[in-house]
Image 1 (tube, rainbow, N blue to C red):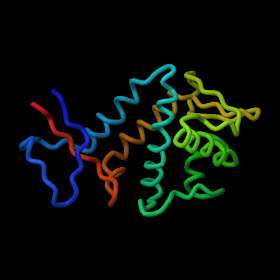
Image 2 (cartoon, rainbow, N blue to C red):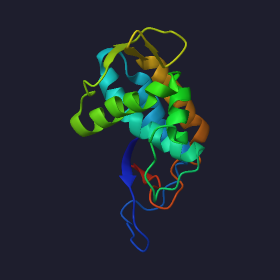
Image 3 (spheres, one colour):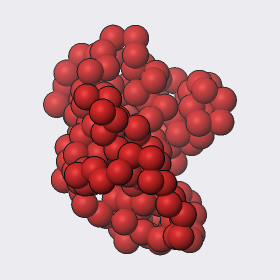
Image 4 (spheres, helix red, strand yellow):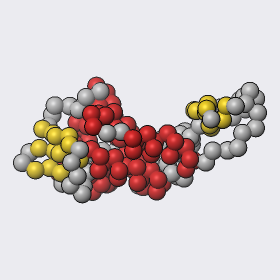
Length: 174
């Protein structure tokens, strides 16, 4: 079955072209749009995953720390979001800001990790998403992916429930 994915109509707008369709739950949308596609990524698709990972992490941080959509997530030194990120990534808090900036801001603004730190991306498993040792940040990409997917599955009902970021509807196309 094909789907028309991603229609969001503001209050008062209507689209009658698809008739009645059974609703698709937020859990199903989270699975269809995020969890399953992320689980299929492998190998050199790590960069694509990392580009998706950081906005998802920011959404998860907002939910877990109850940060409103109307304000920016504060990633200043010693902030709760930065502490959350350090714990999630299993890296020292002192390195969290530099890692967030190099990865999140580099990938989202330039489509590449900033060269402000030494890093290694690996598909190896170490039982953690990242580590910092000898001045090198190692990201265990697929372990990070699995941990992000677990959080998405855990919080699917609440991640996109705030005022400006609802999940759009999905319609089955006959």
